[in-house]
Image (cartoon, rainbow, N blue to C red):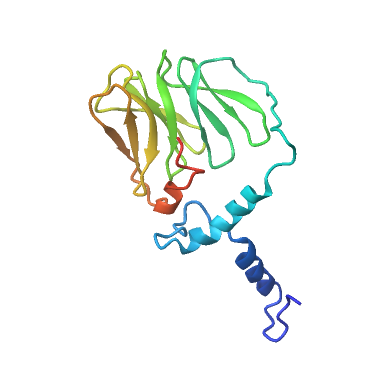
Length: 204
């Protein structure tokens, strides 16, 4: 019997037992996945359970979905609200797919060919597009506001992809650029190292 009647904990005891057996999913931005990996070990149980479960059929189920606009994009970023943003490369509008699978477009501040390649989600919810040939950075806020900002170094085929560090800095990955470049997001809430190294996030 899972209810601990002697202590009166009831459902709390059941939750503790389930957490011990199945693991616990932490919040992505509260620093609960610590450097000692205690919380990550609990989180890993959930990941391992999913892997061990396999799949429902002997072959992957492949399907298509409608686009709101047929443009050129390079990479994508998952927003905190579940929207998937495509990174604009050679198109004049942004495009996203909602958590329910509905496609839509939105206006961009800067549009040109080969503008961006890859994107990174900052801890404050902003999505930063990685400049490939664009002379300015471009980001989308958690509320959907698009804006640009100045870059220190710009060139053609400069960066492709980026990565978020635990301190909130975003590092652009050099493609043909002759120097590195990073953005300090100056956010008050930072992702832990465990979150940044997790395969769900470490592939922008």
